[in-house]
Length: 574
Image (cartoon, rainbow, N blue to C red; front, side, top):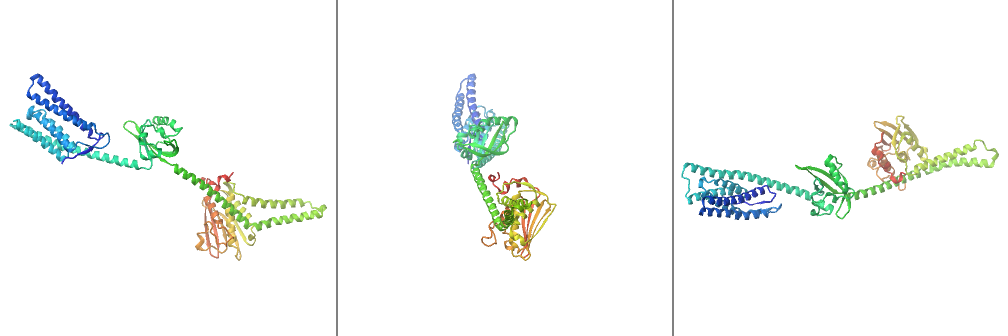
């Protein structure tokens, strides 16, 4: 059974078929010209007429084959030489060649070797088995020709020559089949690989565009068409500049020329964010990665592009949300400051009332006995005013939204400042405060006001825990530990139950009665510590007390200092 196969002008076998057609033109013309030339020398005979007719027949059916090849599509697979047509061509060739062989000497004809070419032709168009049948048909045709022309080999040498000819045909078919099958396998592999690559490119989410050294677009996948809004036919043959906005459009050709000259590029071999231009003129952001494809002659460039319009919109939205979140965080921090000041309000009022009472007494004495005013009276009044001013300044600095940035300060001074603030809380009067600040702890990078709030929140939290203690003690200490500065705040209060210990840093979690706490103090403190690159752990034993252990890096990393000033929006830093 014969086999047909699909072939295109780009098929490896197409050139071979063209050679066979060319050979047939040459063979037919040679037969005719040779016949005419021979008749000129020896005179015209019936044999010359017969050979002329065979030559004309060869040219006639070769026209039919030439039309088939000429109409073959450039790159679309198409059926070529159905089995019947193939057999008709082969039989016609064998018949014509057999006649010529018989008329030009039989077994000694110089044309006998041309059967080998037809065996190759048969192996290309037919299945291996049918190619061997074709060889059998050639042997049968020649055998019948010998019989009907009475030229059957009678001598031993002629018989061996005929046998050698038959073996040559069979060997030719065997070798041609081997080569043909190998070519077909290669063609199938190339076609399958082409289909796989095309499928990958066609289904890729990213746009893929290939250009030559002149910037001319050679190919583009469907995603590239979708991204830029062009049809494939509109892109092929255009310069890549059509996909670029100004000023890149004007600079692109010089850029390519400079790269070809120097081999240096900012984008080829890597990726970066660029701007693209759609067919409707819209400019949009792209992620682009360009790679070089070396060829035997010159080189191509492949660009993989991704439309990041949605991503940029999401990033901008997230940026806005982050800014709003930072504002809300600052509002919570400020609210917690006000809450702490509310807890200390009575103590603050008392601290201010004392110097005011002293000043009032002095003024009453001056009013009653103006001539008896002591020399140090004005100094005493100034001292009391300064005392009030110091209290007001402390409150103002603590209550004001944070406008300071990272500073190199002495950690112990920050701790002492926090203790100075909480002394206004009336509960501190009944608590023994133990301060153990190590001299080894020197300077550290932090935001002083933010970290002072951390300490105040934790000290006030400790005072809440000491409210019902028999002998309340609050201890605060500092020390060095490897690469960290450590601050410990300890109380001997009621302690924290194990079941809630892991929740104390959660926002709005509190065990205090309604109206006694916001549940944000420890959460905000934990957040500020984290933004300083530190950590905070709690150790507690029920009915024995609690210790908060804060560790801060002795040297703040640049990343910590760039963390938006511990959550402070840029608009509030000026």
